[in-house]
Length: 288
Image (cartoon, rainbow, N blue to C red; front, top):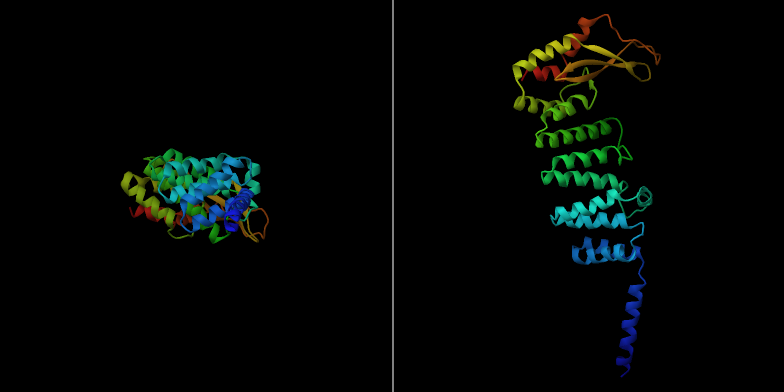
């Protein structure tokens, strides 16, 4: 008899405690369920937050996690819908979320980047490029690494642009991306950008015409005198050539004046032409 009387009280207590769970509690429940592979239970917890607490600053992150579940289940259309909810959310929410250890540091950047990959998988290349551009500009709040790490990140980004452009049959855009996305070094060897450009040129361009064009371009090089970079003791300017309709830039060290503004060595054109003919770009084209 006592057990029968206690049962309603026990049920009431459990239900009351469940109902008093905060949005953060539901979020932790959803995250834990997902980690255990219980996607249905995770979705139920996440959706409860969206339904009962639609103004919670957790909502963009909830959409992010729901999108991740759909992406894992290969439900790309549903995943895209949720990631776009994150991208469309207000900047204020994004700032709040960036301070919350539940979420990645750049929620919108990450969502736009994933959207680009999902659209690429679906063959929607214009949308893939659009969201890749958003992740790389509007939502790029931090540049990861410096020196070689930053250079590697930039190279990876350019290769990704070029890959999507080629898949979308925008070959000229892909060539432009690889030729103009970075300033090349006069004394650097071959790199991933040059390797990818070589693949494109072999597949889509007239090799004999390219060899003639690169010789003409090198012969008529010029300096971009409006661009300077200073290191501790050197001044660098852009030595440029026009190739495939693009302005290709090489970084050239000017006079060593210990940080003072210096003009490049304009007089010795023969020396500069020889340097340009040793670049990875020139060598690659001549070996096509």
